[in-house]
Length: 235
Image (cartoon, rainbow, N blue to C red):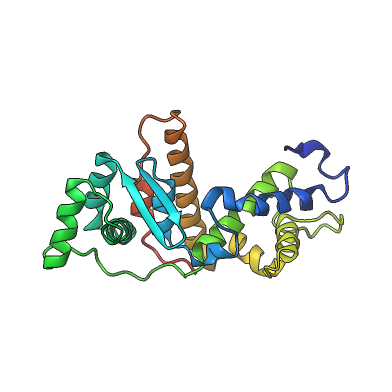
């Protein structure tokens, strides 16, 4: 299902239909609704997107992961210096150990060192807000609407055209998610949200690289950018 930017304003409602389509597609990306995305962490997305980590949920109460040796080495390598990698490694180890599912040797060794208290803990830093993943998905939707239909973040020329933030705000309302247009516009433009935009961009790049690697279109995804960038706290 695609829309052409050139005819976006010739058919009333098309930008809103496209926005609703994006929201309805969120479960295909994260395995849950946009409302549920508010509970996800950056580590959840790192695990979900990583080409070397597969998540298995045979029962709603049972979650475990299949981890390649390369992915395990990567997690352990970054876990001592980056809080996102540390949390991801902790989640993978705890879920697999609780459900008696095997781990690569290097992750088993790391988990043992954690129990003994000898594994390094990354520097303590302020975490992104709890709903960062949800905000990231909404922001990504705004950018896509802007690109597909050639809309601005806001319109002040009296043309009566919708703007990208207005379109997404209305579509969110259709899904019982209430984010005022002015709030979304601040995410896109205001200097106080520059860190948020930077982190959102880093996360989008990581997910895109991981997807290309899974599809065999990229030989090696580069997680360093995300692990390095996702250390500042967005507002």
